[in-house]
Image (cartoon, rainbow, N blue to C red):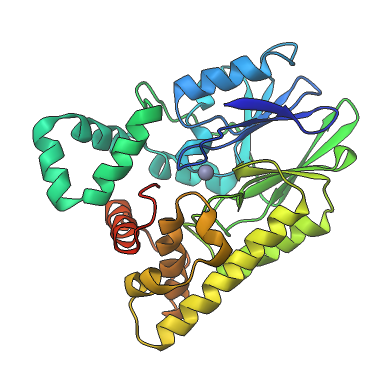
Length: 325
Ligand SMILES: [Zn+2]
């Protein structure tokens, strides 16, 4: 984990491994401080606080959650007394979407001989992701701490005369997606609307909306974008991600029309330049998401996580891709 200064008063903490759960956090070091996203577990949350602590005068008054996923909210409890701001949907969905019990149970099963043998047979992908997570993460002691302030479309903060705009852009990757724009400093904290140098994962929303929101980020003309995952970039990061989504949707459509299943399509679609991104087999999620649209299924149709990880595993094995999530 490292800290990067991205403008006069904005900072980012980045998890360089860039696999699942390796989410970034941001800091706007004005007006008592605003932290954007709080990491995936308490050790990472504490490490982030230590890094930002090198530049801030004291624990921040405010926290923003860019959406409801666990890897962005499981450090909330470390900011005792802070105002936690998020879109209304984040507060509604966080207790279910970011319930730590399932992940804690999976890691426990993967750490014990008999349940591990069972997982190996029934859910090899879930076992593989558990093994990956056990290398870096410890989900003990996590309590879900909900936002204390919710908003609907836009929420503006005035930090010592610097405006910060929280703009609701969901659902494109998740229901509560919010980007944080600091116009005076030319910075956008994009949350998981932007993945950089790793295969994106989207859970709720549509391709059309996601592409539209990437256009919106470009239109804000930021000098710097801090993605939810991956290294800091400029607008080229948003443009590249937009090209990926358009490419994946078109390729998926071609396969759908040929009558291939989403798994078969995921085994065949040429990854082109995106094959160099981390966790390339996560493309299965994007293909399946496109298929859901082609089948006119609801945007918020739930995912079976264990099954999805098993299919990513299957695609990785069959293509000889890196077995990473
Ligand atoms: Zn994330």
